Length: 399
Image (cartoon, one colour):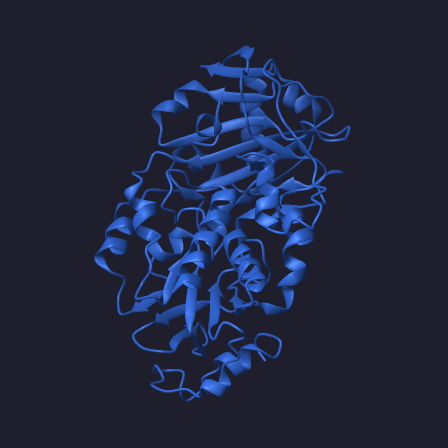
């Protein structure tokens, strides 16, 4: 079983004010001139602003820093991480509320750090071919051997822990939080960004890393308007909603994965999986991964008792009442409720022309990076978000 079978499955701590700030009476319109002395462009002669501090935004900042290019990251929310959010407060190992697996070779971690002098100590755990894999038909679970499944789990850590250890320390002083960019004016040099308060920021180049749903909902306006290639791709894109739920039990009564065969007729996926698999823990944690149409009934429920009772009833029917007998606690993450994210990711079965188009650069000033902005035939995972950031930085620095 491969990835698509399962996951288908100042402001700027002293730099931003110098690089950015239009005065309050300037914020309503684009400036026509700026002093070059006001922009600290570093050795490269340019300054880059990254919109969004998720995986792609952090990776872009990390690569720019390595290349001696000055930059800042403007993040709409109160912290960094985006869709690699996690919690350490549920059980005795980190629970990944968003991106959880490495859908590539373990060597990818070293490629992300991009520094051979750094030892990568992150531990990973793979799956065994004979792990039990449940297939649900009606209310019956048939168990078979899983077969090949190349994805890797983090042991005692998460994607966000990895970024904390190897990426964030070098870019933390370049992040500005609670700054929602609502307009990008790239009609002239410098590029001007406006945030939700009307405050303006000057910059030479922009890397936009916001989730695709933010662009689809036109939460960011562009001057000039996005070209038809981008607008058409956004109009065509089916962006899956998403949710994850984790339940702790006193015993593990479930297979490593449990898939619902009937969900193959829906636009999306619903899968239960052993979230404690490979962890050095006695906790029994079952994860529920939901994207697209199968997520909607769960998202409609109150996340407390109502969601708990709905899931326990479903599991009890499949596993002879074991869920209710052994339930301890649960948590959930509804990505539709995150105001600066709004959804999960571009559907797995989208035409490649959609992410290909959205990876396109605008007038050598505006670049795009993120899990669904790529010219490659794969998207919607952390390593592809990082890869797209590298592509954007490569293109930017080549010009």
